Image 1 (tube, each protein chain N blue to C red):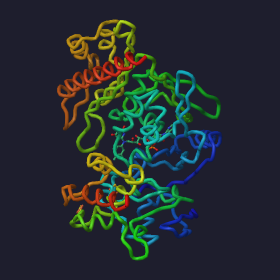
Image 2 (tube, rainbow over the protein chains, first blue to last red):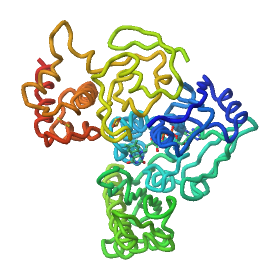
Image 3 (spheres, rainbow over the protein chains, first blue to last red):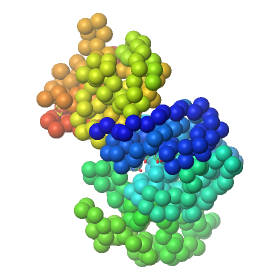
Length: 294
Length: 154
Ligand SMILES: Cc1cc2nc3c(=O)[nH]c(=O)nc-3n(C[C@H](O)[C@H](O)[C@H](O)COP(=O)(O)OP(=O)(O)OC[C@H]3O[C@@H](n4cnc5c(N)ncnc54)[C@H](O)[C@@H]3O)c2cc1C
Ligand code: FES
Ligand code: FES
């Protein structure tokens, strides 16, 4: 399992990296944690002529609190996100998602930006970023732009990033007062990837009704999505068990559900409803605990 | 490409092709065959070493990425003929049968104890989830890590 030959570049800052990406075009590939790209290169499913290793760019590795938001550098690793005390208290969906990814070694190397840019249909991060309405910050030699999560994932392994763009940072809202987060995942027993993964953030109003709800589902379709009918059925309502179950039956509405050896489309669709209910239920439980404190 | 790495305490310099995987570098260039290759597909963890103190699967990174880094392999754990507490634990608690997974298992356990010196059995299992063993059924491995945690805690 030996990859094809390539030239190796290790830019020290973002400006140099964007210049190299622009210069090599389709012949170049960015290397972050390498835990999606290196396996593909070993199988020769990817054979870039130029490998641009961005892991030495310190300015892309940070977790920064900005008022009621967090900005997270694309090179922040799954492990750093899993173990951040700040995020555990102020944006718990991220550490809870991170700890479900792969294994310790994978989390030591793999990065948030790499996972989002790769956009594997069974990856965990996409569920969290669509649930939170995150904003992706893309940078190229000619400028920068912000892409909302709902427009970021285009299709299987395809994102809105242009070949000359680098994903530099991700911005997510902190957990509001009376809010609760949860991630519920059904792991593939061999690969550890999500057969179904559901991320949820809910916010209660003073009377305990659901003021806001954001749900992100991964593993079920070609890309992560927000189940609009599910959210609509709950928004503004008092969230009883029966209503929750009825709403979650719409978890895969309008989605072309994946089917593979492990899970048929029918079974996966069923799992989507069950895991959606578990995630929303857990998030509600936490939101009501947080309501009592505040 | 020229790289400089500190392996088990000693710096060395080599000229390597960018596509050389770290595991091949360790085994074939540095001659340290204690690091094993099991699956070659980033799953089994047999190739786990510490790079900059972090457990990584050395079949899933290139040697050039380790330029300037400190690497610890299984050969670097025993000091002055004294087994490391983890090695002692695997010995005492029968944490291995064929031994193929053991070097990677021990380095993952090393990472676990560095982050969490007194793990519960559940935490040990979670900490070793990236390492597969086809022989032991894991129970003795968990005990070996518990042994090492106790021995290091003294
Ligand atoms: C054994 C194993 C188990 C795994 N289990 C899971 C799991 O359970 N859940 C899960 O979600 N993932 C899992 N993964 C994947 C892992 O999370 C990867 O780390 C992640 O998908 C890719 O991140 P990376 O930093 O390693 O990116 P790389 O592999 O370095 O890059 C991936 C792709 O993104 C591009 N890229 C990287 N960074 C940027 C950037 N900043 N801007 C633009 N493009 C960029 C690269 O060019 C490449 O095409 C697993 C991987 C392995 C090996
Ligand atoms: S040989 Fe590296 S993970 Fe199996
Ligand atoms: S002891 Fe044989 S694989 Fe673990």
